[in-house]
Figure 1 (cartoon, rainbow over the protein chains, first blue to last red):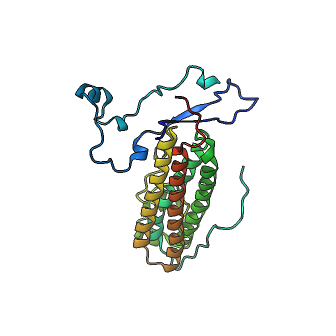
Figure 2: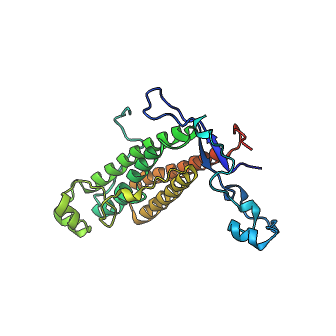
Figure 3: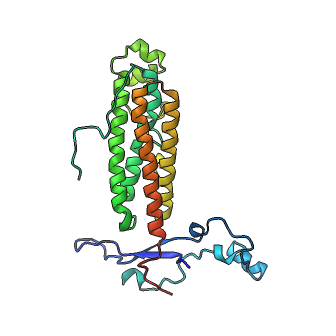
Length: 76
Length: 189
């Protein structure tokens, strides 16, 4: 399994004018990893879920904003 | 900063005085998929991309300027001793009226270079895919120019430049793989 968000620690200088954001993140959504979509890929249980998600397949769903982001993350 | 080596990355030999070929080649000088656009695009993306791939953008962006210099040399050699009449016959009458033999950043159809040729989305995946697309478009442009050219010595340099596009595309694809990789990730679940 892969993660949909990656994190990195940019360089910051003691002379930077703004307080540093010590951790930054970027999105790596599922289509980067799937290649050809497999036949018979599992679908959402209900049409309503699929409609809310914008896709029939949970494996293609890319949540945004990052649901796992913690409040303090940007300034750890 | 940069250090400069006073030589071309690969030799440029031009057999014939051929201003019409210069008109086509200028596409790689000031066109949307040209070397100037490539250099500016990559060097500009360095600041906001994850640090693992900054060095790659720096090196490739720098090499694009070396390519720009080769293209400039080709265009210059193809036109430098052409008469005004020859320039006109080659479709460069309008260029001559405005610039004499000076090079200018515009494409083969004369449209001036514009910053809108360059994207900077800030999303590392989007930016690297743009870079891969740019390399493939530049490779295709070299192919079409080689098809239009009957100068074997010039074509030798163009084939070198086309091959560099292939290698750069491969490196950008590797950069995407690096950014996709889950290793060293802080797990936040």
